[in-house]
Amino acid sequence: MQRSFIVSSPGKTILFGEHAVVYGATALAASISLRTYCRIEPNEKPEITVKMQDIETNHSFPLESLPWDIVPPKDVLHPPNTLNNEIVTALEKLLINEKNNVLNYLSMLCIIYLYLQIGSPNQGCIITINSEVPLGAGLGSSATVSVGVATCLLLFFGFIQPPKEGEDYSRHESLTLIENWSFIGECCIQGSPSGIDNAAATHGGLIAFRKSTAKTTVMKQFLTLENPLSVLITDTKQPKSTKELIQKVCRLREGSPLIVDSIFQTIDGISRSAIQALESETDVRRLREILGQLIFINQKMLEALNVSHITIDRVIDATKAIGPTKLTGAGGGGCTITLRNNDCSNEMFENAITKLNSFKNSVYDSLLGGPGVAVVCNSAPDFDAFVSLLENKNYNLLNNLKQTYF
Image (cartoon, rainbow, N blue to C red; front, side, top):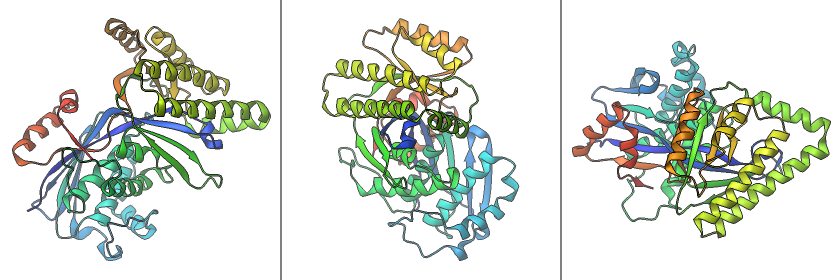
């Protein structure tokens, strides 16, 4: 009998290295405590049913309607690193009615593609997704879905086992399998992802990364935080185009290559200094001080690249009493991250949140560098209670419940 599972995976933020990473500098990403929850249950009907409750989507596909005849022989334990274009073309035809809603279409493409690769034509399932990671905010929402779906399918069809309390999964082959299959899911959604978002959602903690000299691969180094750091993530709600901002920096570099390259070198130094502190500093207060200084300097470098925005300046001003703030991601609006400093009282923290909310921002009190993908529930007695919490979007309670991390 097939078991039911609920898994969770964290979003991510770019802590240091935006824009400079495009030109070979080191960047640093970190998991955040905002999480996406994915649950999988047996389906009595020969169908795959997908429910994405945050965008009010509910679709069922008969298993016989899926293009099983063009799926290569399964080798689930050795995932590919690229998409099968023939399968993608077949799924585009299957999902033709979804193309007017890009979010629905790409999500369905990811989920059904992974089901064809990992699942079975003989066993239907119901996949339900709830998320507290805001969509389109640069916080890795699509990667959390890819990681959640890949983990659920791998568990449901028996390719991996749920983690056991006390086991060290930091380099476990299950995590590698989840990371690799979630990368394929990200390819369905993002086209050519870097692999950083799904790696952060899989492993948690922090990831230092840079492009290789050939600029075709990404070099990754995983770091852990014994005590996750308190941060405030603010979504300014200011629309922006990542592509246009990258082009803007490119034009600036073409006009002033020596100056812009020196800024990139400084940003690279900021990332490397942060890595050194994370690896060697055991005093949490001192670590916050070092990272806070680096956040301040990194923001000034991004302002020099002209990718900040008046909405970001407003957040920096509103949060200056509680800690340093920088943009995270491409800039031009989007999200910021504020590191809570050592002397910030709860009253000061709440006052800053109130002020940010008055600007019509969305504000998230979060932890930086926490754990990665986890199994929330895999036992029948508790399953219905967890489902009730999910359907009522009681994420605070869910996040405080015991989860078993890979």
